[in-house]
Image 1 (cartoon, one colour):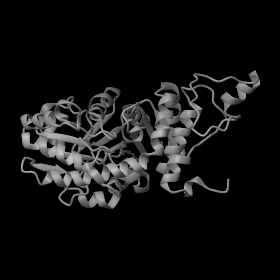
Image 2 (image 1 turned 180 degrees about the vertical axis):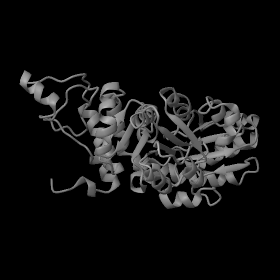
Image 3 (image 1 turned 45 degrees about the vertical axis):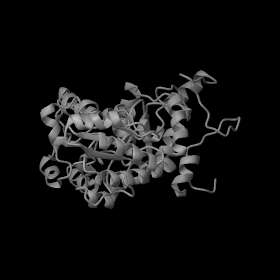
Image 4 (image 1 turned 30 degrees about the vertical axis):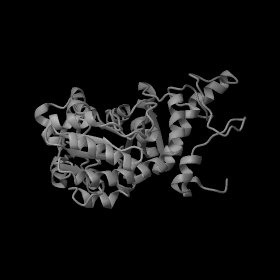
Length: 394
């Protein structure tokens, strides 16, 4: 074709990227619910398994529907390779484990999602990997923590749940000086608002469960990187450990990608407006939103993001006030998910970050009065009315 898909605008990539039509020339992407594939001959199977002939051999390795999803997301991200996984946490786990072995060292931001923190703090050390946590907003702490044997750096920016901002370019320069690879969890920023690979990162991971599906239907994840890194660190481990994405889930998320740009931009506009409304209420002790000038990481956020995202963090002072607020909401759901078309709010200390030891939570900015609010596609005026009424009752 004369058109190079890499030259398309985002909206076109999200609709047309990765399409591989069958002989039936269907308009919607085909759903290939199959475990395996057949061959014309034993010689054909031999050539397929050796890589001499292109094609699929087993859906644990890859699948036509999953491949369309991978190709579309890679095109959007600007990555050479996308490897789809069963969940976002499968992606984080595979991205880290593929890079390290006993005796290596990993550095991560302290304010991580609870399960991500558990992998770094509890799981990796079982295999002889040393780990260090730092204040992800302080470049001096990154510089002090990175060692000659550091092999992986994990950044979550904006972080979950308090939206800390890490300077991806600055940390990447420090990591690359010792040969370490930089992994960025880009879920909160989404591929619409932040391009970590362009900022120096080596690997980008997503929970596709969030904005990419964005409608509360299926689980999924993705690892995006270069062909060279995939070949050296991920191809064999993913092939043999099998954290593969269901073709059905891949098909659902292909449809989710078609509207990702529209949904995320609308949600972000509403989140910014709602953050400003929350900041004016006397009950709210603190509001954190990356594109508000009073956010501690505002300048860095503006330098590497093109939008503030769909999530707001607020602090009401006490657990009692936070619970009263959540219980008084009538439109916004109480749910630990985010990035959904439906607005959702949760109390991180008792849900998403419950596994973090209580004495460590303040170091992450996780307070007893904290609430994480994921803004959906409802009318922003209705959402303002709902949160103001709930705050008044709190």
